[in-house]
Length: 356
Image (cartoon, rainbow, N blue to C red; front, side, top):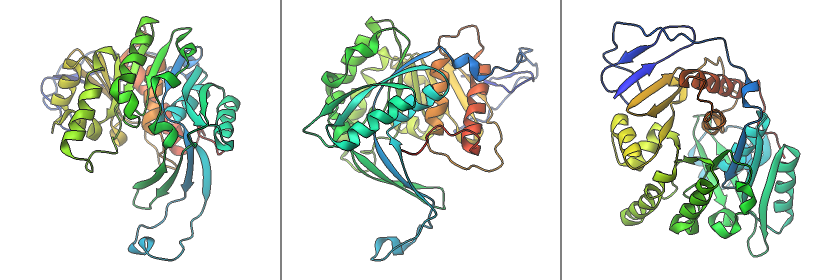
């Protein structure tokens, strides 16, 4: 696998060997490729793009970081600096990111016929997202309590009945009108969609000419469910990869999905199973894009102090989806712009997910 490790206004070098999980290239060739970046792109390039999202929506109740100690498992009370409510769900958050960047965004999902469901739908509308959500009187709208720790880890305590029961019959076909790019987010949460609904949604999108992205995030069953259940869930997702243009995920998630211990093998498997390309979340090391046996990486834009981290991977992916059809823009420039947007989010210079 070859690797291009790019950065703004410098030559690119091509790696002749594999990369480690940290995506550090070995064996860089001595000859620079003089495809130096052109003038900086700016966020105006996102305007006019169209993103359709099918995924989760809920209420997140988030706390400011607290120290993770054993006393949290005992009777008592722990103070924190802040508690806020926001729209939750990877799908809903991705829709909000895209709308904030100036794209035309539609979100399809399910909520209850309760006050919270109506509140979340209205919040999407007020933030520039067209909500095609179905209100199900038999299902309450879900919530998650997001425990953030000073160690940087998080723990979610969730009740997601509306998302767990989402099926393709809940998806308004109007979401496919107008073309653009479809994101199937939160792929692991709904068993009805794993059992064939995902394939029907993606085929419908493909027939309407939409490009398709699939977010391979963490499956809550990993590490807890029996092996045969986990294998069956992975197989259900692998079956739809031939319908997918872009797979998105971080290194750990993608390796676990592919049951691989090294990134080059994982990337080869994902494309061998049918995915067109892979957008790689590399955290502090930046971002990558793998297609046709070549991995292009772009280093992260430095942030002196991270004020928030929630959704940074989703935001990176949204940028790459909105730029997917722009064949006139080199991949390295797309990655660099996405990293700049993510850096603004991390530093708190941009507020994409405002409180409810």
